[in-house]
Amino acid sequence: MEHIEYLRPDEIEKRSFEIISEELEKRGIAISADKEAVTKRVIHTTADFEYADTMCFSERAVETAKKLLAKGAHIVTDTQMALAGINKKALARHGGEARCFMADERVAALARERGVTRAAVSMEMAAGLAGPVIVAVGNAPTALLRLYEMIRKEIWRPAFIIGVPVGFVNVEAAKEQIMKTDVPFIVNRGRKGGSNVAAAICNAIMYDME
Amino acid sequence: MEHIEYLRPDEIEKRSFEIISEELEKRGIAISADKEAVTKRVIHTTADFEYADTMCFSERAVETAKKLLAKGAHIVTDTQMALAGINKKALARHGGEARCFMADERVAALARERGVTRAAVSMEMAAGLAGPVIVAVGNAPTALLRLYEMIRKEIWRPAFIIGVPVGFVNVEAAKEQIMKTDVPFIVNRGRKGGSNVAAAICNAIMYDME
Image 1 (cartoon, rainbow over the protein chains, first blue to last red):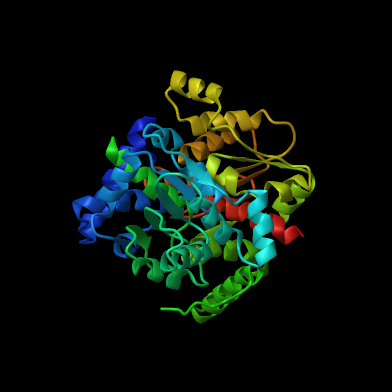
Image 2 (cartoon, chains in turn cyan, yellow):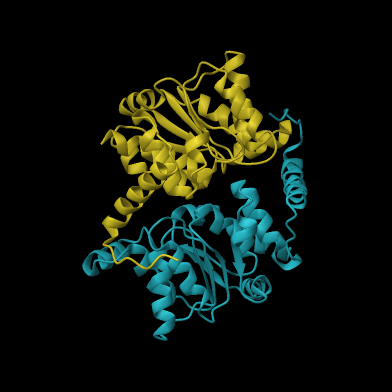
């Protein structure tokens, strides 16, 4: 068991990232510079080094996401938890807003009417926003399935997809589908992910811009 | 890769728990009945079976937590994300309220003045609430360290501790300290945990009461 280190609050995060870097080196895992900030923050959020192997990025994904955020892209997420975790002040500095439509009563009514998930309907609400949208899915594979369908049918194309739902039903397949589109993405291959991971990815990109 | 299963929204969760049960059996992991609902929901939230080995419960922990919730105990958490994830309607049915003091400006001012974390100060705010308090820590080991200190000095004793901070600095040691107190607990030993895990534990206990 570790001993307790008495560090100032601001030193704790710095020391955590040092430990992550040391352990990645010990494990012989090298992360390319463009993926480093995102991957390390995901490990920081989960204490799970498996993410170093499973995180997938489209060509120049982080650079693309930064450019979108710099011109005021909005972030739409599929859970209140991810919404709570996204640094909304950092996002607002560039003009963007974070939104989640899951608690919207109209979304619930539409989902009931059609027998689909609220997450699927909430992606259609995202399509209604003005300006470029980064979709960050941390929970519902059905959100990704609906996005894929909208992209394929040329109904709507989000500017960027952060696809990290967690779970056991349709999660892996939904992620693989997204990686076959031409939409820039950051996806965690496999079952793992979560609202915390979605928020961590958004924040890592924003912090790396500063 | 899995194929896409077309299930009604309400069937997805049921199927997920079936898969979790099947895989636990395949791995030869038996979870005792009193710990099953909580442990399986944590795995459902993280897709990480490691939790089956690392979740620690004090004697009759879940039963104790249910009794507290039934008499209207409040839940205080250390992150807005966990607060967003806790089912507040289910909690309110028994009279309890979920609170997080992290965004409180007075907490920030007190933390700055004393050079401690906001999480530590927010535990002192929790001590000020009337009635029994379940503390659910998903992020900050400093919250657990402060709780331990308050318990040891007989300043305040929460009714129950859910101790699942995640991270690399002081996290393991803080969890071990809590398990040495006489306060009933659910703790995830090691580095792993998170706001999502804290919320999942709270919700699992409440759903199991219904």
